[in-house]
Image (tube, rainbow, N blue to C red; front, side, top):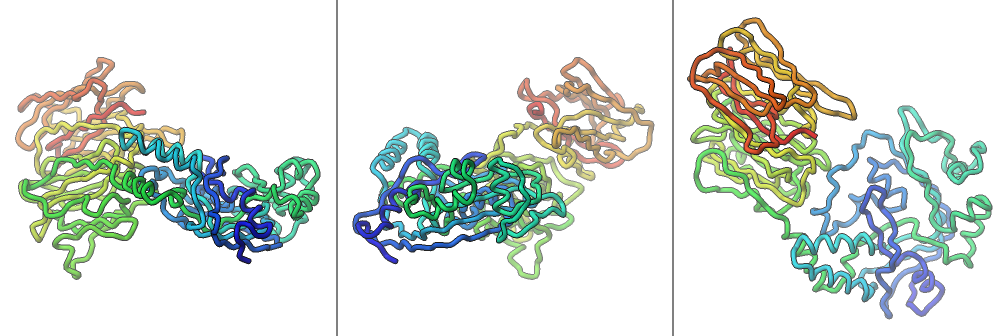
Length: 581
């Protein structure tokens, strides 16, 4: 039935329930209801409040932990909610994987169904003043952080259509071949003891065991009534209209961002703030130095879904970026012809973004490209695998790749430039610097694939040919931490010429801090490594031109290698980075 604010018991229910309070989704245990009322119903608003005396039993199967937390509270999953202006800035970069088997069982005692329009709501003056004060901060970053605090206190979203009443909920993960047993429509499990969790399980007919579970949730009616007097007394109390003050929002069907109820001028300021304050940075371009004919930031700030590439055995032909919202940048030349099929697609997972772009080029074209993500995942190496120029590693200091600018000559990429967005970053990024000796043709290699976890990886052993000849039999072991364990990965042998080999093992807290060596035309004759412990290892032959490399900052150490090889090492790029975590 429809009600006006001065008619029937519905309006009193609306004002005394938590319907007019916001809900915040921040923090590891969200969502949670905020303590402050944020809005009120306008004097002459029309809304719907319908009596619904029913008990609904739900068994839901969330895709991941985030979805599980929303369902546990009776909210739609994040993908079913409207976007908030700040989602692009404060998105969750570490969304849990969906490998666990989540299940949520709820009993919902439905008393009233309430439906409003956002036009029916007006924000409280104290909320409006708080937002106005936040927007007075002198910097854009300060404004965003002040607003973030407001959203945590007042809420991020408010319901427009929801069920008010009471509910019991239990949510957790099940092991392989585990079930909850029983049926959520029956309540006859064995007696599992007097505590509140066991009582809720009993009344939800959960006789199995979770491997992991959230705290069982009671909404409406009061925990004390259930724990002190039992389920039947609690249920009798809940259905009593005289106890309507204890009813809560237990099932949300539709909601809006809290900013939607603000005056238009404030909404516009907030939307503008979060849309345009992202700092965009650009790495130096790689390849032919000419004017760009496509811009990696032309479509605005958004998340990348996948990168499509066209390549041959000698060069990069074209490239395209598909964004999560369905927009596409590129292809720009070769890929526009429908008969020229995509060679490969590097698809990103949820919460995954690109942090490193590797490019090899000559004077006229980009020959080879490769990408690395914040989760240490490495793409295939696309394009020419031999006879390339010096590698260039583009990063944004941990920022996420936004797009790629560059030039195309119709048949291949002639120039590429990585464009970064500062609002999405990985916290454990290791800044790097490169030193290259003797850029030369040969089969290229990139040890980044063997690092394991980028944040914790370190060089722990180097094997080499111990004869007085050019450097060959070169093989590196990288060690990193994974799930509390140390994982070792060994590269293939670089330089296949025969000869006896030896190994040099570094101590646990030992790092290479300086490299000396000798090189000639297309050959690395000798390498010498010096460590922070004062140890030295030299191998190869005394021939060619000497070189010496040290990192640009004293706190950097040798991180990993790139280069080219044949029967011996032909060129090496030394990648320096801050010490591992």
